Image (cartoon, rainbow, N blue to C red; front, side):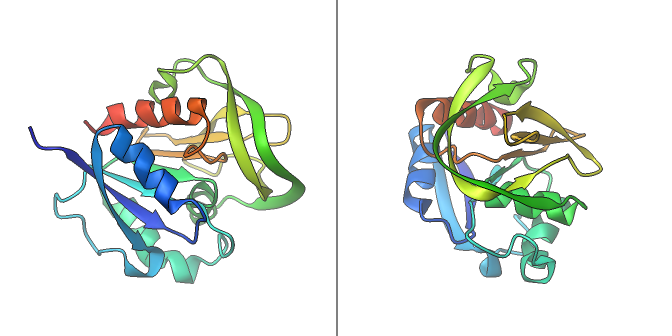
Length: 187
C-alpha cells in the first residue's frame, strides 16, 4: 500500500521538525519546502498540504501569492497552523488584531460535528505561541472552534477542504488527535 504524502510548507516556524514528525507518526510521508519554493501544481504527488506557523508576514499577500495560488487551485485538503491559518484568512479578506501574548496550553471549545474533531472531546487543550488573532471568519469560511481570546480558534472553508488552527497542533495530545482527524480527510 502506498503511503499518503503531505507537502509541508515552512513559513518560518520554529517547530518544523515536530510538525513533520506528527504527520509521519500518523502514517504519512512528508516533504518540506519554504513558502517561496512551493510548486505551481501538485501533479498528484501530494494528498494534502500543511502550512506551518510563521513569525512574520501573514499580511504579505505578494510574498505568499505562489502559496495562496497553490492552495486555492489544488483539490486536496489543506491545514493551516497558526500563521498558516492567518495567511489563508488574510488572503480570503480576513483581518488580524493584536492581542495578549499567549504561550502554553489553553482550552478551546470545538464544534463536535466537524470531522476534524472526530478524535477529541468538546473542549481541547492546545498549545499557543502568538499575539495575533483572527476575530471573525472571512467570507467563504466559518469558525468551528473558539476560546476566550480567539473567537476563531479553528476555521473551515465552506466546502470543507481548507481548515485552520490558531494553535500549534504539533504539540500536546489534543493537537495530535486533531491532526489525526485531518489525516482521515486525505486517506
